Length: 472
Image 1 (cartoon, rainbow, N blue to C red):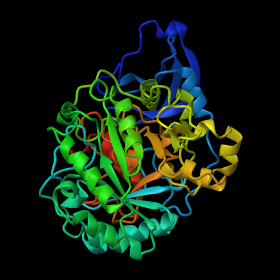
Image 2 (tube, rainbow, N blue to C red):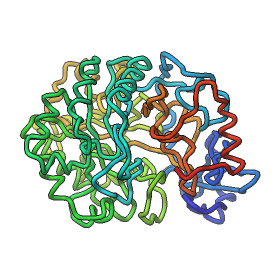
Image 3 (cartoon, rainbow, N blue to C red):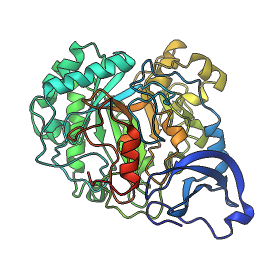
């Protein structure tokens, strides 16, 4: 059993196991693509095992309930291929991304990293948050917008991220540039410090065309932020939300769920969001995964199944475990969600909300699904088609990101969340941020030299596997 980001399977697992399906996964140490078997043990826990010829057997816990796992996995949607590929796949996954001919789904949410600088140093941050780095120029950012427009068109959402985007003095210009290029949705991924503390700042972004704030929000007590951000900044988060309310800007609460730290506060976050649904449009739950910096000790990796069950169990009867449905824009195990409709006149729950999944049949959901809907808008678009007013409802999505231990390369090929680079490539989110168990990246950040179109991706594979890895 390899060390690192895995959890040991029970000793008697082989005697009671039930094979579920085969896939391809990675060795966490060398990132070699391997044939893998996914199975359930006697307790219904889902595991994925593979054997590297150099590093031996690795077994990773993948889901907390086999029946739920199989239900989610088998509710996929037809795939919509990317309209364009940058190059043929010349190396095994996860090498040769960007977007290669092996990729099976178009992007619906694309990110632009506008900076690597940050005004925090959060222990659980997977981004390239550093200090003292040069930012990409406006021309380079313009080229990244053009890459997205060429790859998926301007009808999708673009998320500005980093680092912390508000460390850039020209962020309003970047927002305006995106709007002038025709993008209808420009979202800001932020920790909220500058929004909360600088009067008039958010108003400037709104005037430039900002359409949404994606605010990191990990809990409702100070100790949670000491664990995720290194210090108690709950008051800052609440002020940032109030500033969004004053500006009429919708905000999505982005929650990094860490086992033993804030996984017991999901119900509290849900109730807070319901009480503030005039400004909080959604909750994005992200089980913490190990890429880049990760200093928090975990008992075991959390899966989307763990988060779904915890949210349902803490919702005081508002949401059921099977109310979270695959969102259809990527592999069904990657994105699940539910929309809570605010309908006090007909809701049976005291909150006045009702899950949309209790108002739709699976057949209606599939028939009315639009492949052009971003993850957070799938239910809203379907409800609008049915003539149902969504008002101040609440979207909840669970993002099942993958690291070296949990990477299923078949899932990777269906990724719809992409990171755009100045070189003209759009990489799946999980491969772009992928590091091995030693913290080594295979894809340089936008500040590093990237593979040219005439480079052989197999050379990168050989350099990596033969020891030419870099700490990037």
